[in-house]
Image (tube, rainbow, N blue to C red; front, side, top):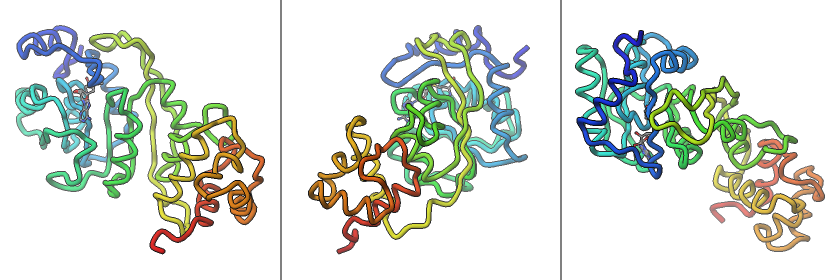
Length: 283
Ligand code: SAM
């Protein structure tokens, strides 16, 4: 049994009472399986009482699992109807819960109430999963670890290693902040409505960014250019950013990178070496 968590009947009741009609644009697929919620919470490996930020609590399926496990939760929800209900849903089951909700687009949140969160746990809206993940890691330096559910294909991309076919912008940018690994698959039937794609968990552990004199913006600009046209060599792909093919070639050689290589072979450290060849950001 789901105990205090939300099963199919509770999800149906809540949605019906609130007049919620899940929208694709907001990636609204709600978990209605307590077993899956508890698996996600277990995988998140939270410390007792740990401060957690959840993006997109929706009807509260995962939120209740986090609170049940003793976490202190601040949730950010963009949908005013859902944001308006969530505190009552939590309080009805866990009157002593340490819980707050912020009504906002997660991309716009620069500060959070209460203690700084050290963990991000979320079933992310699929169409904005990568930008939300990267933005949270950038803005909230206190985040030490992350467990997010995303589309399975996106999970693979985030966790991909250099040299792999699917290694790309999300892999390198995530690697700037953290080490990432895929941590399990979630089927479609545990959601209402069922999505058209499988989901997967990605676990990230914060680490220091590569030591470099380049700024993060410079490194990310090199990454974006390198993958803008995947088939191109780095010499060609970076010619715009460095002003010419010859300048790009010089920069790549100075960074110890083969100008004939493609972006999908470079580590985040190598991207940082290349970015160091850009003119200083403050010049
Ligand atoms: N956590 C709930 C669950 O597991 O059942 C809901 C997950 S649902 C996949 C994604 C949630 O994110 C929805 O509640 C949606 O309204 C919310 N959302 C979508 N875009 C958002 C954004 N930019 N900022 C904050 N919340 C967002």
